[in-house]
Image 1 (cartoon, rainbow, N blue to C red):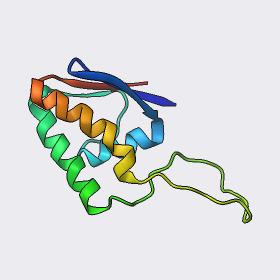
Image 2: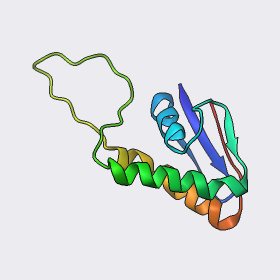
Image 3: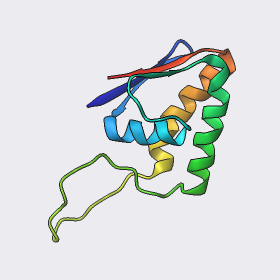
Image 4: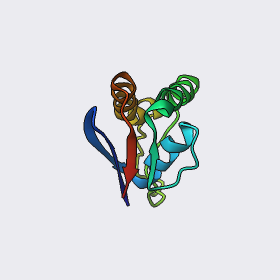
Length: 104
């Protein structure tokens, strides 16, 4: 599943579903898809997400994948890198007073 985040203030962002749900939860929401933030709720969600990233920036946030074999190397994408596009979207939405929506 892919999740698209949309606002009039920024380009649409598409993420893997499990990564998107984890980030939505870090914003202080249930993780339900579809969902939305009213413009007045965007700054609080942005602060929740920024705080979570600041606390654990190097934490791995990878899409669910089969367990690699013991000879296979794994590379992880950090929470800070996964969250950056969403933080930029929320920052733009907050600056322009726009709603944010996400859906499949």
